[in-house]
Length: 76
Image (cartoon, rainbow, N blue to C red; front, top):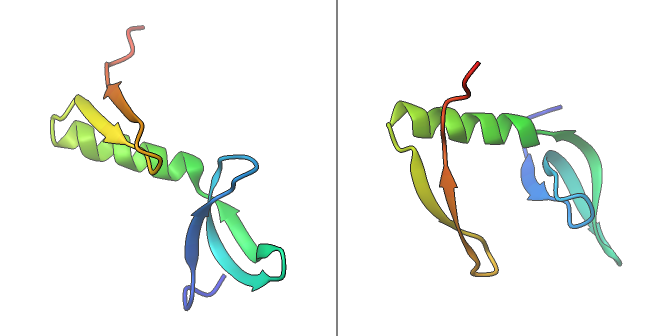
C-alpha cells in the first residue's frame, strides 16, 4: 500500500479502525484498499498513556459522550 494518500476512518458498520485508500461514490465512501489497524491504535494509545504514567483519563467521543478509562496491570 503506497503511503501517498492514505486516510484513516472508522467503519460505521463494524466500528473497526482502518487505514487505506478510498474513493467516494454515490452512496458514500468505498475502500479501494484498506488494513484494519484497530488493535495497533489501541495498543499504541495504551502504551503512550502508561509511558506517561497517566493511568486514568476521561475521553469524549465525537457525539459528546464522556467515558472514564482506567488502566490497571493484569495480575497473574
